Amino acid sequence: MKLIRLPKEFVYTPKGTLDEFLRGDDLNKELYKVYLRVKDRPYYFKFEVEDAFNEAWYIATIVMNDPHPELILKDLWYTAKGDIGWAYAANLVMSMVYAIISLQVEKPETINYVLMLMEEASYGEDHFPFFKAMVENTKIKYKSDFTIRPQPLKETENKNVNYRFLTEEYDQQCIRDIVMLFSSKEEKLAMIDRIERYQENEERILSTDEEIPW
Image (cartoon, one colour):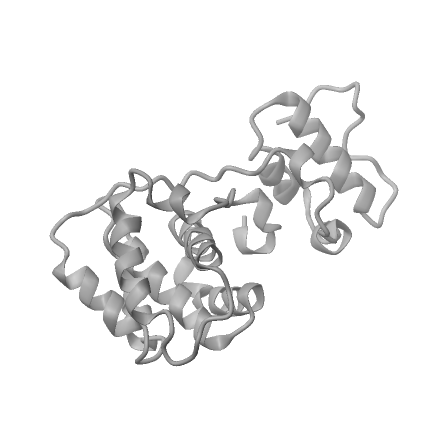
């Protein structure tokens, strides 16, 4: 499944404050030190620090879970640019992603391709060299949690998400992958119902009184 196609709420649950990132997390503390050095290069950043950290960890979660993240790096840069709004901010976020995944003690084999391409892209002189130096000078490796944790559906009910656009081309396998992101039967059924409501065809995937087929 292409995680990048899903609403962000299905992939990553954002943190609300900077302290939530820094509390008990040595990797985020090191990232924050570098962030403070580069945050106004080349322009004064017009977004909150939490936005940068949430975006970086969201993209890192995709990279660590996608079977071939090396094929979607450009798409991820555009995702960061679209979410935050500026190209230089996207360069900052991707530089943070580079540091996050580089310093993991356990990485999928495909991450080597990703790191190679990110080093070639370099994401500008204002951010990437500082995070690359952080990686080179850090002797500690980290074991971060990249588990896909969708927000509970009740918390996304009022989100301005165009589910019809996002789900109209989903086949049964893709719908299955989405539904299985949720742990409880109630949320699985609720997600099926939500997709059905936005599907163009009128054929129901599953009646609510039936068992989940997966």
